[in-house]
Each structure stands twice: as C-alpha cells, then as structure tokens.
Length: 244
Length: 244
DNA sequence: CGTTAGTTTGATGGTCCTCAAGCACTGTGG
DNA sequence: CCACAGTGCTTGAGGACCATCAAACTAACG
Image (tube, rainbow over all chains, first blue to last red):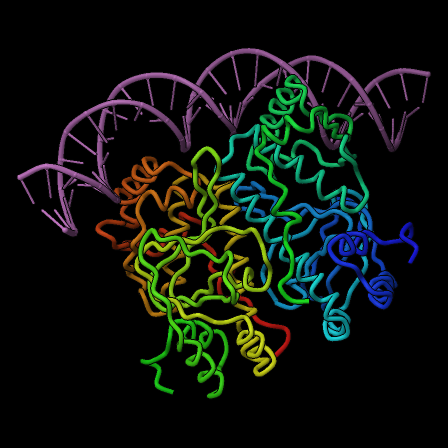
C-alpha cells in the first residue's frame, strides 16, 4: 500500500494497528461518495431518508450545543480522520449539532456499509471502536479541564491535545500546526469568554511556551508547555484492545 | 414476568423496549455472581486476570479523575441499573477510577458473557447500546452544564437529572428521592467548591423550588424548577433506535 | 462523650465576565 | 482606487461570581 495516498482515517487507524490490504480497500471505498460543506452551513442529520455517518477527509468541524440564552458550548472539535455522527447513525438521538469551521469534505458512510464492515473485518471493527473509545476519553478529559483547570492550563492543554491529534494524521509536527479556530471557538470550547482567551494566549506567549497567531499554533517550548498544562497524552494513545 | 422481582437494569431496559422472556433470564443470570464494595474502597480494574464489567444492583458509585494538585473531578454518578466499566472491559483504557459512595452490590458480567449476549439477543444488545448512548448523552449535558451554566442552574439541573434517572429504576417519584451524595460530591461533580454548593442549595431552598437535607432531595415546585434549570429531559429518554 | 464527617455562615480576594472602544485585515462595490 | 462593512484581535475598566480561609455548629458513631 502506498502510504502517501492514505486517507486521514486510514492514517489514524493504521497508527493503532496494522491493517490488512482488504481493510485498506474498504476504507478507500468509503471515499466514493463525498460531500462538501461550506462554512457556517449547519450539517444536519434530521429527516434524511438514509441515515449515514461521515468521515472527515479535509477541513475542521465542531459539534456544539446551543442554549436558550444564546451561549454556545462546543463539545468537540473534529479534524480530518474523525468520525462525525457515528452514534446518530445508529440511534435517533436528539444530540448536538455540527458546524463546519472551514470548508469541509466528508466521506459518506451509509449505516448499512458500516454494519457490513463490522462483520466483514473484525479487525477494522475493533479499530473503529478504538477510535470511538478515544473520542470518549477526550470528552472526559475535556470535562475535567473545564471543571477543574484554570484558564491558562485549560488553553495550554487544549492546544497540546490538538497537536497530538493532528500529528496522527500528518497535519502537524512537534513545532506546531495550522489552526483555523478563532478565539471565539476556543472560548466556546473551553467555557471561557473569547476576550479572556485572548489574554490567556498573550500570557502563554509572554511565557514563551506557545503562540497562536495568524492561524498558526507554534509550540515554542514543548517540554515546559506539557509540564505546565499537566498534559498526559496517555488517554490518547495508550489504549490497547483486549480482543483482536 | 413478575415485575416486583425485576432488577434495576431490567427495569431500566424494559422502560426502553419490551424484553422477551429469554432476555429476562439472561439479565437475571447476570446476577449470579455479585460483589460487595464498601465505602471509600476504590473499585479497581487493573491487573485482573479476567476482565469484567459490572452492573450496579444497589448502592451509588462515582467515577472520577484525580489531578496532581489534589482536586477531583467527578465525571459521572452511577446508580442502580447502571453499567460500570463497560468500556474498560473491552479496552485497556487508562480511564477514570471508581469509588463507592455507599455500600455497593454489583453483578459481575464477564466480558465473554457480555459478548455472548450480543450474539444471542440482538434486541438486548440494542438495549444495552441504548444505555451506553444515553450515558454519553449525559456526559455531553454534563459538559454543557459546567461550561455554560451558572452555579444555581447547574445544581438544579443536576438534581433534576438524578430525579429522572432514579424514577426509571423505581427509586424516586415526582416529589423527590433519597440521595447519599455529600455537598463535596456535588461540588466535585459540578466544578464548584462544596461551600458554594451549600450557598446555592440554600438559595434554591429559599426560592422554594427544591430542598436537599438529611440525605433527601425534595422537589417542592416541579414545574418552576424545570423551567429555572432549563431542564429538557429529551436527552434521557427520546432516543429511539433505528435498528431492531 | 469525644471524635469525625458533613453542614452552615462570614469575610476577603482572585479569576474571569461584561461592556466599551480601538485596531488590523479582508473582501466588496462604487 | 478607495470608502466601507465585516470579521476577528487587542486592550482597558469595573464588577459579578465563585474560591479560599476560618470557625462554629450538628449529627452520627463507637
């Protein structure tokens, strides 16, 4: 298999376990039907005749919940290689909404295909379950961050998590990554006001640990930042399966 | 089937879908091996020869994460009928820890039995997946609460969620329920200090909406409380399956 | 009857929000 | 080519919300 042509999802899953040739073909076939979403155009699932999940092939998405007073809580940020609406493909949940942050290309995976994959390749099924499990671990970490970390650690931790995730799909390295999020996105993700996010970013910059300017996150002092944020990446990659 | 002998898990799942006689038997068989945990004795999964999940039959548990500075974030509260360590039965995740809040009786469900159940009864499998999905919806709602609700709404919302969950297993009604949580538990769950929780509870009491005293939550004004907390129970029960 | 766990209240201060305004950059239409 | 609007970033001032420290009180329990 030619690795340079690997889709983000294939890159991500193969970092977790060795995929067989047929697995690669299955993942490649998922790319057949692709949808494009443009910015600020809500990705809606309701009322579709055929229920489907998506896999992001390019672009960023956020899943969020709106409250009656107009405030928004971003629950999760999706980057290429991430699933989108996997649960809502199986359950008719009144769940969160999705909104593209950039222009997005997403592969459509019909529920039937997904279930077929599960029976065709138990290994791939395990890999997908791993990805889902990882998402939930991130959700827990997110909760801990908002509940029990101060603003600076919260921002630092989030930027580091993004770094780790992006590296897995080849969209960044130890020195940094491109990031289309605005300070409003950061605020709504971390339970802070955008204004406070700005001040926090300034302080982190002054501490010469990380900068976030012009759509690019630059990690100046890897080690000190990780130490400061008490970032422990184990929740992202130390998950090994019992079965398979 | 005699409903009075129903276990909490059976009660909960049957509220969601009609279970066949054989399903009831499977659930009953899960009760064969039961473990007792006493208060403050951590429930640990690591290093066990045979991996297993638990189903709470009585007592309350909390799952939490500790931080290096000593603060604790409670991620979820488990009540009778809830699963415990379902994911960590399948994945070797470095996940959160569990601690009993009261003395706890938990049915041990070996991973093998669980997987066997999935193939034996697709309907029961769907019901279990529903329960898991519901847990994640609660996690999301928890995140939104901590991120974007003020302390009073946060407490009110949490007490209402507990009410709804407990009613499903017959441990409470519209007027209230017994609750073994301390104000420290509430604080660590909601990202508040226990002291502030106390003040908030006093205010809610003075507003004559809800009281929490002597281990009992009394809902004084159902309607006004729901309105105040902007509590929308749909994330708890409006989830219907696409399949099955 | 002393000990411990949990609740309650007061005082003080810090973190973070809100309001307000200025700045930089981008794309658009006259 | 430039005015202008729109979006996002930046900084300041003032204040609300909630944490922390301290201490008294109550209930449960051996």
